Image (cartoon, rainbow, N blue to C red):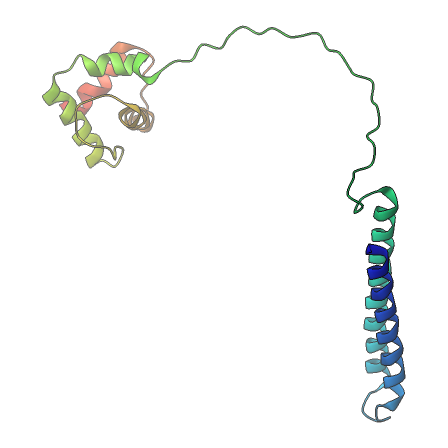
Length: 167
C-alpha cells in the first residue's frame, strides 16, 4: 500500500512540474525579465530535487524493512568484558556536621534569631527567623564569611563570624 501511495505522489509531482513548465511560456513576455525567470526556474528545480531525494530515502527505508511492521534483524556484536573497578566510598558531609552548625547551636535561641535577623538585613538570608540551623542559614553564613574574607573551617573561626554579627 505504501508503494502505491509513493507512486501516486510521484505522479502528482510530475504532473505539477509539467503544468508549471507549460504555464511559463503563457505568461506575458514583458512581465518577467531574465532574472525573474531564472529565479522561478531555480525554485522549481529545488522543489523537484528535494522531493526526489525524499522519495529515494523513503524507498531505501522501505527496502530495509522499516514501514512494513517489523524492524530489520539486529547484528551480533561480540560482548566486551571489563574488570570491575572498586572505589573508596565518598563521605558526604551534612551541613549539620560542619563547624558553623556546631558553633551556631551553642548560642541561645534569642542570639540565633538575632544572627538570622542580621543576615537577612544585609541580604544574605531569605528564610524564616526561627533560630534553627539549616541549609538556608548555612548558605547565608558561608556567603557572609566569604564576603568578609573569613573562614568557617574551625569552630573558633565560626564563633568569630557569629560574634561579629551579634556585637
